[in-house]
Image (tube, rainbow, N blue to C red; front, side):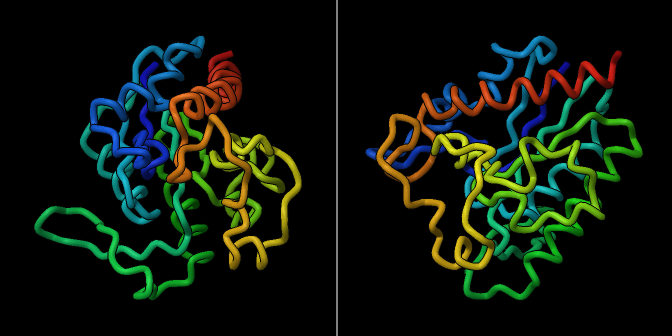
Length: 227
């Protein structure tokens, strides 16, 4: 089965410190590649992670891929980015692109939940296997259980379940309430670690830790779907 990973720089494999890695180096360390080596069912991958991507462009990329490709025997891993990333659509390139954060013109909770609902049902109606995760925003900050079942979310949707929480050694633990957590960016106040680069992106070891955490969820989902 082929893994199709969508998201931002966390998915891409970007590390900016002490120096920015090359696209080739990003591909070599990304957790999508490492999932192939650890999963019972995933045998190949394609990485659509791109630095700066917001949830509009991530959703749009999923939609375009399904429209233009045979998705039989594919597994979609959709990784949401920051809720407040503002993007505009450019007809010339058929892409949404990140613009000035200060120009935010949307309700981030409403937009993220509607995008999640739309993409989830879009894939589900086509019988395409998929799971959701998030780079650094735990699902408890925005998830509405009336919109999508928690069985499609990696980790406990009521606790710290983002990729950053994985590399911070607090995955599935209790965290701060929504308001304080979001306003202060307290999720990034963590001790130095071999899993976290100076730019707060996952290191090579961080991507390994992410892959080791995600694989049981992915393999279990595929096993239940095929049994």
